[in-house]
Image (cartoon, rainbow over all chains, first blue to last red; front, side, top):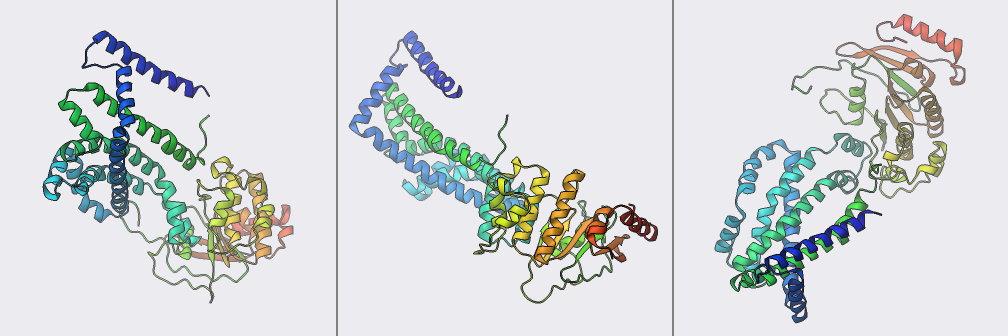
Length: 249
Length: 227
């Protein structure tokens, strides 16, 4: 009951600190929350803000889904099969260490400056991380529960839904959380380099105009969207999925 | 096969037949291969040569493992219902009533004591109406009062469901209280070293008569049975 006000106070404190610093510096390069808010309101009224947010958000969603599905599939197979793990492990190490920028540039060169290239580049950046997390999850599957499922003749679907997925849930949550944060940052770079809309493109545009209020405005708007997703979707979902865990005293 | 990759022979020339509807206990020292025998019967261990012959027809074999092995993320009732064959909707309320679980149906396993979890494991096994039930030391690490209560429940359920039971235990007193027949297992590799019928009525397996039977058993099979 005491948690919510504390969080709210912390957020208010952040804005207060920002306002104080901006007032102290008193330069167009360091706009305060009021100026940034004003820009956001103007951009929202013209429809620009909403349009660019939706464009970026759909790229984030596409890349997120693809990387989570592909990464989970590869990771689970690697965690369950030693031979596949040995064969693919060096590939994962190469891809996880490949700079995001290199993958993006190569995707644009080889596939053209297209939407497909943009989403592929982001997904390729994220897949190795998902693989590593999900491989850990697949390794930790409890053989005792699998045996129980076999003895009681659980169908394949029943085993996946009631025995395997609940065990993988914390790993899926971890991959999803870190994934969302990483992916939206990479999407901005992808938009900056080869797209003509989206938050990344707008930031690039206002960078050329040295309009810091606009840059911060777009950033703030997107962070608010991500926070809204966190609090309205991710946390309630997690709460529901872990309802069986004993509550810490 | 052990963890360091070394192969070792656990069982050799192991052979026995169970009469339908009887209650048999498999007794032997720790680590002699009792659990391995159950795993072979359950089809969980395929690294053996030999045959397991089940009666003709669609025979359901289920198990109560040493640990309850419930799904922690499903409630008591869901754990039992998930074990049922697809489409089957038997009335399992009487089973829950017998086991005293009616008030716990919506609880998660982490909210139950070990004794209650074991009851759920028993409910799950009996709910599928098995033909053969294998139990692997199902009452180990329970206090004696709880174990005693669960033994009574097991016998009650066994009578009502006419199931063939093979139970592994190293508690000889427990085996003599429950079984029609004792299979004694020992050696390395292990085989059946004794096959003893328990001729007494279950209700009379108490006090002096039980002690007398135990003493005799211990005398005849000193290597395997230490009461």
